Every structure is written in C-alpha cells, then in structure tokens.
Length: 143
Image (cartoon, rainbow, N blue to C red):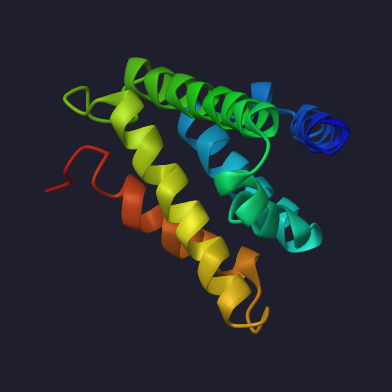
C-alpha cells in the first residue's frame, strides 16, 4: 500500500503546485490533463502498475486501494467538468460523471499505447489532441 500512497501524495502535491484557482474551470481541466500525462511520462511504472497482473488478479486490498485512488480522480474530474458547466464554458446537457470516465479512458488508453510503443513518443505532446478531441464536443457550438 505504501507505493499507492506515495503515488497519490505525489499527485496531490503536484496538483497543488499548479495554482488551479487562478484559471477558468475549463483551463483547470486542461491543465490537469497535461499534468497527469506529464506525471505518467515521468513515472513510467505507474501505467504498468495499473495494467499489472498483480492488480488484476492479486491482492484484494491492493486492488481496493487502487480503485479508491482512481475513483477519487474521477470525482475530481467530474467536479472540474461541473464547474466548467456552471461557468458556461461547457454544455449543460452532458453528464459530468460519464464524461469524466471517458476522459480517464482516453488518458489510460494513451498511456497504454505509450507503453506498447516502448515510450517512442512524448505523452505531453499528445495532451492537446486528447483535450481538443474531448472538450470540443463539450463546449457550445460556435456558428
């Protein structure tokens, strides 16, 4: 459990250093996505841990702790989406929790592809494509 706790502490510390309160809700979300991809890039063992046999079939307490950490991140993303909706930066007809799950799936899928490629691309370079793909559909249509 110490490893999971250390990862969570590093994530939380890194997020505190982003000065998110100075940004609009949508910019907060984009900054968090970039930070998360940078974090994975700098800690390549994390995606391996998420996709590991140990997590899939191993220690139930470890699985429960990882699930709690991921659920907390999903709740955080959901809150960012809700704040962007409230600020009028995102459409109000999307389900924030469902779209937080979609966003996390995109991040995890990108991390998995990065692992399979043997780290042949820079995750942060992909951040804006992920952000644009998902958030373009969330913001109001411009005519």
